[in-house]
Image (cartoon, rainbow, N blue to C red; front, top):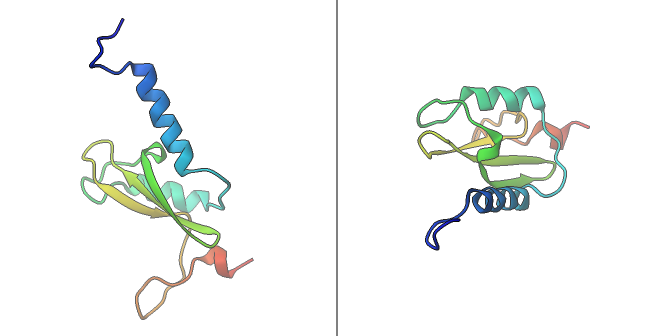
Length: 102
């Protein structure tokens, strides 16, 4: 059905789903209201709203995470954290609330 040099849509979808699931294995604590707001604020390149399915990487900080989300419009990668951080006057990147408040 498909030529040898083309990839079937099913294979592309399965490859994407496998890579996405490999990045996001396990459980997370996410402030849903904050996270949804940040996705809606959009891409730092073109300001289009982001989709979590565009996650290409994750960096964990204790119970918190920073997700690297690729824009489906311009391809720019925007970092979105799983929750708020406390303000640190030195570098403006204090600890995540989830790692401090229990």
